Image (cartoon, rainbow, N blue to C red; front, side, top):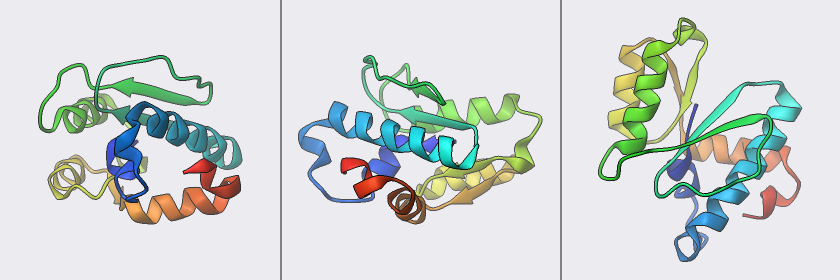
Length: 127
């Protein structure tokens, strides 16, 4: 499970000038990651939903705006899972990390995951 905006924001590369393009690039990288690893990937993004091509990755947009909207989607999804100990949440948000650890999931920092994505996808997926 990936806190999408947290991963996007882990690198100050001007992503804020075109959020939809940054989200699209992240999903493309996650598609390559899922194909290479066989991992099931869910990414939750903040903001208004728009079409993003994806096949191997589940993409969700937080339906409400405001603080912790995507965090709440991640926690709600995790609460419905039986495989919580086998689930890793990618985030550097300490509040979200605390919430998902309390549910039994693991946590991987956004920066560390970004480096793993960059190593697995050609030219860092264009980001």
